Amino acid sequence: MFTTLISSLKRSACAAALAGIALASPASAADLNALIWCDHADPALLKPFEDANSIKVNVKEFEGTGAGFAIVDQSQPGDWDVMVIDSIDVPRGVAKGLFEPLPEDKLPLGDLYPEVTMDGSTKVDGKRYGITEKFGYNTIGFNKSKVDPADMQSMNSLLDAKYKGRIAIYDYYLPVIGMAALAIGKKTAELTEADLPAIKEVLLKMKANSKLVGEVTASQTALATGEVDILVGGGEWVTAGLAKENPALDFSVPKEGAILWSQSLAMFSASKNKDMALKFIQYVMSPEGQARLATSSCYWGMPASKKAALDDSQKKILRFDEQPDFLKRSQPYPAPNADLDKKMQDLWTEMLQTQ
Image (tube, rainbow, N blue to C red; front, side, top):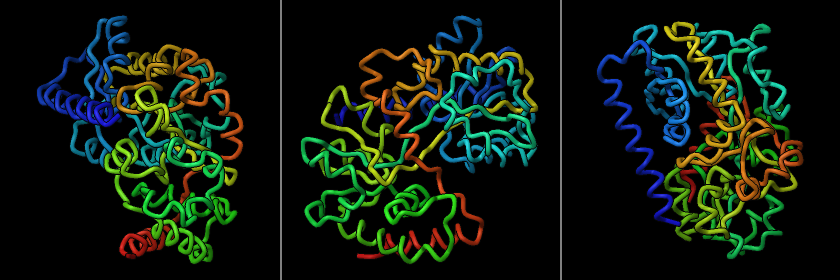
């Protein structure tokens, strides 16, 4: 399992390096230039589109919306055609004047799980600027050969002394604070400063049981290598890609719920190749494109389309048939205003520094 993880990371790094080289010199006007997350760098996703359209897709990877916008700010108008972005951040791109409205009548919106269309963020002033392509959960990832799967049906188990030293926590404050909020029966969309003391109490108990708090690679590696048995904030994006090599790795959506993440595709308003940009979006949203994206070598995730052409084994790993129930019990990332966001970050820092 460790070799699978390292291989995935190497593929991601290699793709990023090649993308940087490809875009160091002017791309052909016939090319498609995409700002992406690593799952879109997989040749298994890109090559069928390139072959079918006799086109080269030049990709540049980034992590985090701010980093993506920084690349755009340093580029010339028209350098980029499409962008992968957190669904909740689409309005930020619209406010910057970056994105082109998408033609809803040319998109398979009816094939999407209704809960992940994210109309509250992917649409601005009645116009659609993004379409959700992939989603999943920040929840509990675990090794079912080392822990009782029944325990993983409740977040309270994360506070049980029997798991002390066997837990890793994903180092991203918003989803894990969201999970702590669910543990005390709060809705992520309704959090206020008054909720922070109770959330802090849960976080400190989790931290007391944890062996490490780490970013994506460190937390994935800890679970994959057996350094820990549970990953708080994990989910199918951690366990699914490793499941064939280690079927003991799994995830749960506990009774309290999970934090829903989703990513969208958007088209740049300054694109010089809008017809092909739309064609690419349509391809990714097709049953075949959805299956290839969902099972990308970088990380797996649920396809937004219910018609994704996944085989039975892939559906089983992704818990495809359980999605309606998972979605009913999931809540979005907290979306605090600037003042509350700062207080949440301060709370997270305090938790990290607590021994």
